Amino acid sequence: MTTMLEVADLGHTYQAKSGAHTAIDGLSFRVDAGELVCVVGPSGCGKSTLLRTISGLIRPTRGDVTLHGDAVRGVPEDLAVVFQDYSRSLFPWLSVQRNVEFPLKRTLKRAERRARAAEALDQVGLSGAGGKYPWQLSGGMQQRVAIARALAYRPALLLMDEPFASVDAQTRFELEDLLLKVKREHDTTVVVVTHDIDESVYLGDRVLVLTKSPASVVADLPVNLPAVRDQITTREAEEFVELRAEVARLLNVGKTEAITAKRRSDEAQAAKWVAAERAANRERADREAVAD
Amino acid sequence: MSGFLQRWGVFVVLVALWEAAARFAEDAYFPPPSRIAEAAAELWFSGTADTLFLTDVVFDHVVPSVQRLLIGWVIAGVVGVALGLALGRSERAMQYCGPLLTFMRSIPPPALVPVFLLIFTLGTQMQLATIVFGIVWPILLNTVDGARSVDRTKVETSAVFRVPRTQWIFGVVLPAAAPKIFAGLRVSLSLSLVLMVISELVGTDNGIGAQMLLAQREFEFPDMWAEIVLLGVLGYVFNTVLLAVEHRALAWQPKQEHAPTGTTTTPAAVATAGAK
Ligand SMILES: Nc1ncnc2c1ncn2[C@@H]1O[C@H](COP(=O)(O)OP(=O)(O)O)[C@@H](O)[C@H]1O
Ligand SMILES: [Mg+2]
Image 1 (cartoon, rainbow over the protein chains, first blue to last red):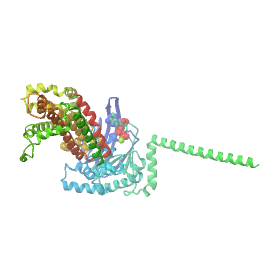
Image 2: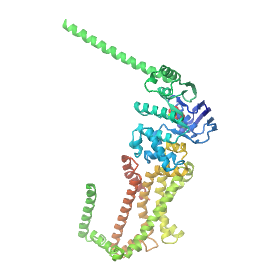
Image 3: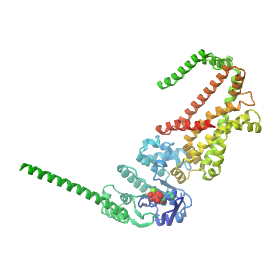
Image 4: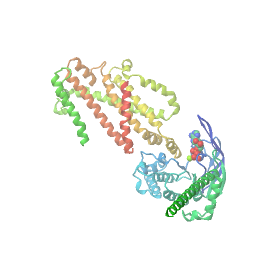
């Protein structure tokens, strides 16, 4: 396997008026060609910052990013990003079809562009929506357009920033499977950033777990699930369940919080049940007293 | 259609009232609308059939005035949009030029007429300079505002796909700024009518403004009023045409968003423009 992406001791500190803020610190990992790596970390830990430095949008304050063996300075060729804020990422003045064609203008003739965009829209199940404007589509559909645009670009490395965070569960499953299919067919290297533990295990060939801010890598877990996955059987597989628990444990803070929340709600439920039972008993006792 | 009838119904009623009042008052300064209409017909539409009944006055005064106005507006539009896009996308340039811009736009354009009289030859050059200098600011400042409004995600999206410079400017910044630019263009268009008249009040006998002044000096009050009505009609027509173009150009905007740009920006902007 050739290495597609190498991140070595990467760090970034934002200089804001309110002071310096270190978003990521000493991140190192590599991604092989054709691999899908999920990066999980708590909200605000620096995941988007990591993607911005990999894509050359911001220059890291320390460390190096290497793509195909070349150091990244500025945005590299054949890299695409699906941004977290997909509704802003689409151009409202262009139709869906033209949004998808937009990045292809530089390299392709009109007819080829058309065909490529139509194909990508078809892949994401939006073949009928090419003539619409983005605002005429639901959030999930807009996100599909953003994904179609990235696919039509045929990048060697596809970066996705919480791509399915704000779509409903049904759409999320569909889009996850779509991503896996496209990745298999085009042999694209993908880095998906997410804060969803299940999603990271379901999608990934590997899962990188990040610490709280400033982010660094806590664990690099291989996912030994079959390449073709299924929303129901895969999620029931022993390996899946174990890995999910492992990731949750590594995300420590998030896990304890979740458990406390669950326990609290369990306790509340129990208390309510006990109260109701007592009230019923008392009522019965009263009724019996009257009968006597 | 009923909205149309309502709007123009009120207009017609008001004109009728004015007619009645003016006839009743018999004041030479305020001729009735029918008298003004007569004067207008005599002034502009009493020509021969081969000129579509338009008179020489139309070709010698109205057409040159309108030409100056439109040329001035186009020049201001091109300069304002080009400079505005450049300044709006450059933090540093705006830091340097911001105070200067605010200062320049604060100068009442008519105050510069004497200066332009000195610099440029009398007539068209001076008039164009007055119009352009007076109306370029709303376009420029609105374009700066619009160009700045391109959000970070769109900047990064364009960077990631390595969008070439021309596509970035014409495919992203310009459309993003377009609603603001149109608001500026509309303000400038009404302002250009004002400046066209003002620039024709000194040192020339050519143009609608000059004709109006002449009519007033010669006590031809119906003629004077006819010129005023003509200015109103011109302003109305220009604005209607521009609005139609704007609606086409901004057809991509969601409907509920479109209405506010048309109604909220203009009155405020016109108010500030009018204060100059
Ligand atoms: N442009 C910026 N300037 C200053 N601080 C920033 C900037 N962008 C992000 N940050 C800060 O860096 C931290 C990490 O942000 P981000 O990478 O967006 O996290 P995540 O994507 O994991 O939620 C946050 O605390 C955020 O407030
Ligand atoms: Mg983020």
